[in-house]
Amino acid sequence: MRIFKNYPLKSLNTFRTGGCARFFCIIKNLGDLKKAIFFSKKNKIKFFILGGGSNILISDTGFSGLVIKSEILGKDIFKENIICFGAGEKWNESVSFSIKNNLFGLENLSYIPGTVGGATVQNIGAYGVEIKDFISKVEVYDSENGKIFEMENKDCNFSYRSSIFKIKKNLVILKVYFSLSKKFKPNLSYSGIIEKMKETKIVKVLRQKVSERLKSGQRHSEAFCLRTVSPKITAMDVRNAVISIRKSKLPEVSELGSAGSFFKNPIINKKKYAKLKKKFPGIPGFPEPKGKIKISLAWVLDKICNLKNYKIKNVGLYKNQPLVLVNFGGATTTEIINLSDQVKKNIKEKIKIKVEEEVIHIF
Image 1: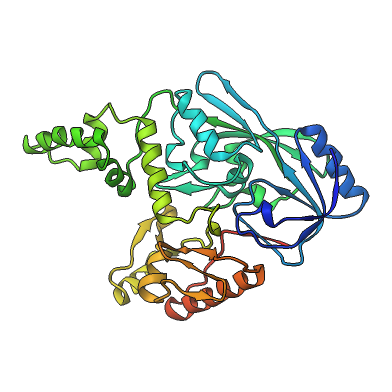
Image 2 (image 1 turned 135 degrees about the horizontal axis):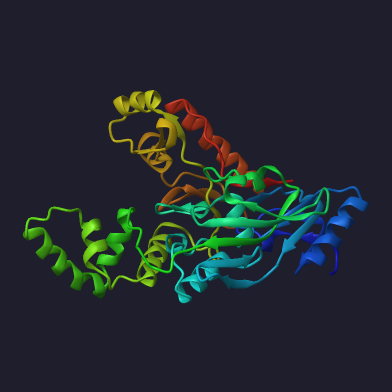
């Protein structure tokens, strides 16, 4: 393992901004990680574990410590339905691998950039699914005491776009174990998936069966019918539909710098939601645990704040999804932060809610 000095980080994050790391290294295994941690302790500097760089915002002045890029790989299948990935494996490729091995559940999380480790830290979610729903345990290295141990799902403190690993930076993810299903059952709770699948030949054929079922007096929802009368729908069909949706809504990171959804959807109590609903009748709300309601921030940005296509200099809100902040080229991290502050201020003024960011700031 080699440690580099003043290493540029722009090409290692999807926003394509930020300065240099004072020190930088790539780790391939536990031995490399231990050497890197020893180096940081010896030189009394902080360290940061970098995955795919898809959910971070690096300061224009760079990182004053050691950036450790995790490329710990590995794909293993245990006990028929347990699959394990190294923290450095690319997430989207891991989803594909699971489907090809007839292990199902991750299809709705297809095409999300980043690594398995980063996805776990963030508790990624999309189209009715969160990664925590399938994680059985996580193997970690504690940089404080040098111990390696496994953490069960319940000990990871998973919550909306967060986990214990986002808080306790001393816990470095080595491997993640997933408990998947050998029997495929499509999750069609997000209506957009059904709409995309309607465009495919397979669903056009199935719609005739659905129509016949409805005409016979069985008044179920289309989603229910598709689940029950269409064994021909495959996990790959769902994956392809999800990929198509993401491509239509989100910018390709190879073309425009972004970190996906920059802001979290606010979760508020029912009383607050009722007041907003009275003032803004169309505002979407989705039930959450403990009687909470998650509101669509994208709707708020478009319909209440009138920030569609909002832009300052080289950064702006993406035309197809206002939750996404975009570097149109040549932007700095400072510009992105300034735009974010303006958006948050506007939201606070309009609906009296303080919005949180999804991205992790590195400085």
